[in-house]
Image (cartoon, rainbow, N blue to C red; front, side):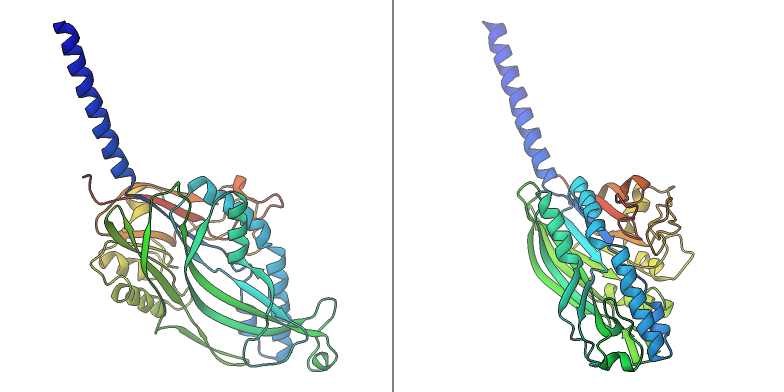
Length: 372
């Protein structure tokens, strides 16, 4: 009887320990937050249009840009990107270069972008690909950066300036570039309570003299406050200017003095266009000096973790990544569980050989706060 009583007591104590451990694990799991940063790639570079010095050069450049967008097929690439997201299940995603390509026929030479026929909506295409995989993500924030339009060849026609406009040989191509925050909305992830959504554009931006006048390459940011099991943090995403170092550093400082100026812990994801090894612009160093820590460096101190860039046509057979500019930075009460790149291996390419993007994505899992 004594042995039975002792066994019952031990069993009871063991059960209590298991229940308590399970409760602790559940509480801790409830504060394990996963985030992702991913530049989707517009599908083409825009430098040709910016460099045009005659109307015909501009028409030919815009035509070439849109042909490149069609060739780098985002609907196909979105399938690969959705597979990456499905494999990692990030709770929050910061997306850069979320293009909306639209057209208008015939071209109307309006100085204001007004084409409305949707050719490729990268955001909707990606959301649809996720839905097919049973994943639901809510669009938390969208900030519109550049919204530009230019004339191009119409389908099957050659737009020759100026007669092509009166002969119906020309159409307009419009690009609206956006930054987006997505949040996982299914019940399998941690319960995220979102509030205080903010979007903004930078005061400091690159300006260029172009054929059509002075163009400002507008950049912006988006943020949201997130509560998990009673603890809160701020999530921020941005895409800093790639071409003007002084402008880029000023934009990084605007992040520090703007959305990151908070008492909350901060998770900051970006295509910062500033190499983390210090070989390029000073923005990375400014962010570290402002108290941010680099999740990749914390987890992989000896791995360069290159994230950029594949060839413009996305058809290179081997990775051509040579710098790490896509970052997950944190400040405050976080500790890193793990960090991984996605979309950086040849096996990640689409059936036709396209890379998912010219940038690899980065996914990080971090603990928020301490055990109860």
